[in-house]
Length: 232
Ligand code: PGA
Image (cartoon, rainbow, N blue to C red; front, side):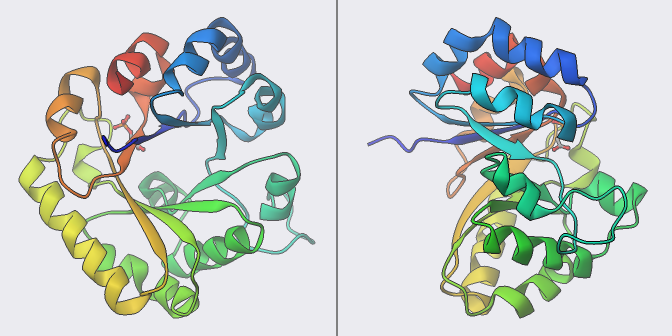
């Protein structure tokens, strides 16, 4: 049987609250149809999460970030507990844009991973070519856990450039990531995504990569026709 791939739409700040709702309303039936053959996760900004939830049907809801703290005195943060209450099923953590622009450390990311897992939310852990050091503090925390996490390999030079990494590099990195988890967190169930300039044009070749469980898609996922062409 053909493997059902996972498509995670990372809308970043491209779509505003109203645009995210309009996307779901305008493409409702087609989104339901697409999600019969693929697992689709839409990740709007925080303001749209609760509003698009009732429009999603079989499509899943994902957040783009969460607080690295428990609920408390942390102005401007959104806790994993809060995300769980509104029905968020997945959450992206450690995106390179946050590591760079918000000075997020791997230690911060590891705290987020734990808080999400405690809430039953599946973390989508973004890593770059620097994955060994990015994963170190995460492994210290999850080494004995038997839960499900997703790892998205996103080489920095491939994000938003229109030039995805080549399939050989992706294949090698995904098998190295598998090995890392086998060695440091053997009971964790891991799904592996690729992200960085995934488009209708690039995706066919990318789909031939062994061990690949799906894609993390930025810009192209904000255009429904492009998302549809990527999935189909
Ligand atoms: P891109 O972004 O598809 O626009 O390159 C991917 C990402 O940053 O997750």
